[in-house]
Length: 329
Image (tube, rainbow, N blue to C red; front, side, top):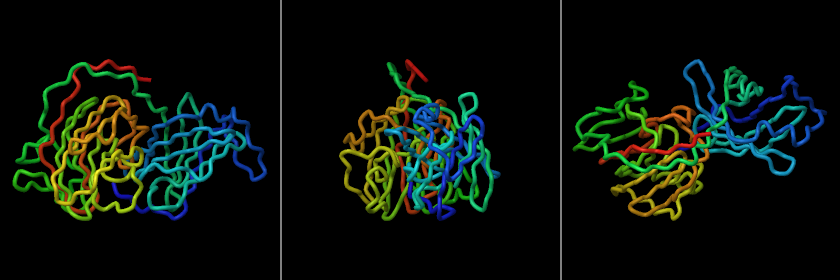
């Protein structure tokens, strides 16, 4: 994913969790650290706009007496709040203004029966309802048996796939048994959904190109030749905005490469061209561009088509887990 330009220049993100709905006052006394306790942790968020539901994600942590916040908007990378404070039972998060955060300007919500509920303020003063659920841990899962590989692309047509936006489907075509994205258009989404799996993908990116492989439709493994000096966790091989590849391999333009990806729960291993670059690491939450924030559910494989340039794909195959011991929280 390449960062999207935000719809507004100044982002201020405000969450009100006061059980009595207290409002912020300039001379209010800061609440003691205990007031933060019910809100610490990771939250899977859904914002309802007139056009569609958008997923988002928030992590609230405490360092000393002050909370810290990390937010994933509708697109872009996980972004640290520049200020996080609790005042009279309200938590206020202020987001930086830059092109790598795209999301509501303000959230206002209350804790109700373990969920966050409220309204979000979008551009031009639009008000959208939103909810937040505690993100599942997805830990403690083991796979004792894998299925046979299933080809996701047959080399002839788009059987087994659908377009997120059919009006922009022309960016995708099939050439010489290759699946080709050329330009900016629709995302391409598998019709089948998967929980735990091994995925093999071969890809070739042209100059100044960008795409990605989304696991369960929520976690992007980055493909790019245009990120320049972007942070390592936004470059090729990364779990976008969260996990940087180590070692990071040199960009290769117009050269076929491979990803071999294993996802169990939220534990991911990525091998690029046979070299392990992410080794059994935990993905904290959804990445920008996710289809939804239902992390506990199966999801599709999707190939990003909404970014610039030409990227070719071939030999896409998945091995679903057949026997999995799960401990979901």
